[in-house]
Figure 1: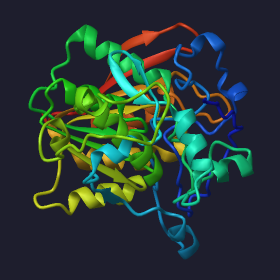
Figure 2: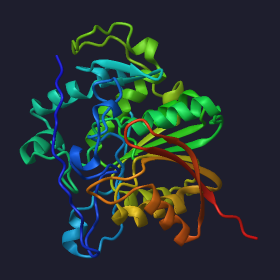
Figure 3: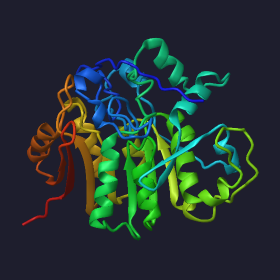
Figure 4: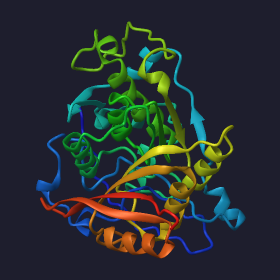
Length: 347
């Protein structure tokens, strides 16, 4: 049994002095984003109107009230009993990747006595797929994620021995793809801890050790898993998972010894609102290695919110720090564009 929530997303644009916390997806209704049925992937949970690969953006924490709404970045340890991660989960697949059915996760969380952030019930109560500073829409998968995956496959992008950040990861499929293609290290970041624990980590697990984990899985969740896997072995040992807003995450990585830099940063549909460009730029500026590459996927424009590729390109050019290149344009349904960024070189 599964079902699909269909929430209205409310616009929440903070004033310059507030902590601007939001998801890496447009804060608008389906009609605002002009998403047509043909834009959606054939999987039930791959959506153009709801949010999966959500990041988080806190460009300025000035007042006490503003700071209280910012979610500090934390690292999530990989559970010791990995078999328990997949309890009450149903798997789906697309583009050669496995991922949990989000509708079942939502149903389980909505009925749970221990709700953690309680993001599903709060979203239902508010009739919104976004509650700024509470739930940042990380429960769905966007079609731009699969645009990037198809590009990586067709262009045979090299991830071998690279350190990778999946920024605003949601389901984590971009990071998982790089992991399966021999990345040395993959870090996953999303705003909500619930998304990391209930979606990102399970998705990473089933793709790292899928044969072992799913040996005894039925088509319906049974709550029973007989495999206990060793997190210190295999691909999962290359992964770290983080939640919290972007500025806090940037500082957390800078405070590591040595400070962490990434060869490749992957991010999908994180430029929906111009109010968050400074925070995104801060992450990229501070965490990308000198010779690193950023792959970014976006719709050309987000109706009702105002962000999009053209405005982001202008923003990047004004900052004069990154080169920005258009890699591919997809014109089926809403126009979607893949971008590559790297640091400008000194003359």
